[in-house]
Length: 462
Image (cartoon, rainbow, N blue to C red; front, side, top):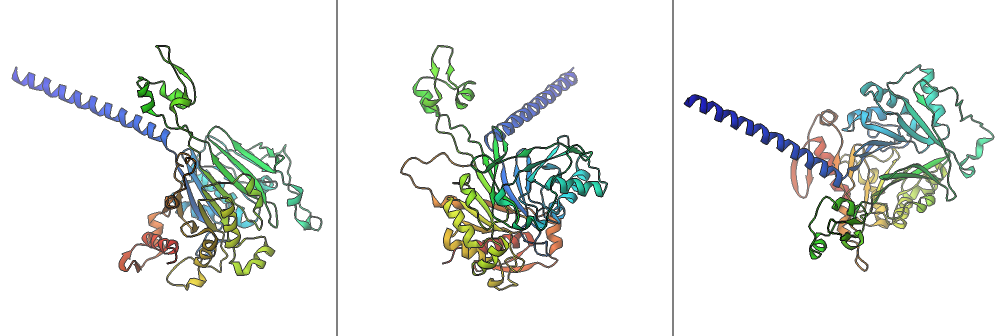
């Protein structure tokens, strides 16, 4: 009898444990869902920061914008599929690709990348690709001539270029950039031809969460810059104002936050204008293609969080940069200053500038480009991109009240990390180096070394 009671007691305890664990899992799941609703990921990862061609120290142009519902790729230079596999970015998560222009160091990596995605992931949704007219022909021809079949379908949406973008040598070198719309690749789905509006702005994507717009840039061939704008989020519900009215929070609070007037069971109405603060502005990121004149971005780019702008050559070589259709750090910084950018990220460096390292003199590295941009933008607002650098873009605060000043310390809230996988970081440098930082000697792994170098770049002049 005693044994039976003990057995029943143990059984009840086990059932209670199971219920507790089940409830705990349910609670944690709901908590994660609530957290996911209240915050969203927006992170930039640079897979290639060099110009012209990939080199041992840099990949060709390629940037990833990671968000909650996937990763968007901006440009795909030769070798980007290798950089992608070295990084923490998952190939199967890339669901949109934006090509700024049709120079090889920005799109030669596309056919190989599509094969890499196909080999690692069977997509259920088509992969969308945006770019200038001619991109569809390049992708289709590459896949057809190599008789490549993909494990997913893809769609190419092309931007119709303006007359002012057409190269002056078009009559000497006539190129057929269109293709037969009736004869698609077996994996291809018909895309759109997107035309500019009256303000010379191309709207590539627009929904209730985010929009992507493009503007034309001055380069040797048609080139574009992309502006990614997150939608504003509802303001904060002021519970103290509800308390003053003798109202307790309830399920209807969500409707009020979404801007709808709610009628309570007792007949009283709750107007969002009375209890909800101003909406929080969404984040804005600008990613530019090659350019020697970025003035068109002023139409859509004011007050962006981050501007990714090329700085191919230093200021003293401005004439050479303009001749090739490129920019200097000073030109990029002027754009950033005019747009009131919070953070300017320089990229697309000439191979003559090495990454920051103790092995090279300062004049031989990108640090000289950063200093030239800082002379216009100020310290702590300019960063030189490097391969596998990741920058987290924080949520924007509520709008400042009239007369208040922007806190300059907010410019340092962009968290930085390395997206390089640990196994590749270990293989890249067999030896560990001893670096000096802030007067202390520390034995650092290669990943930590990257961070230390970055700190060295960011230190403002004393």
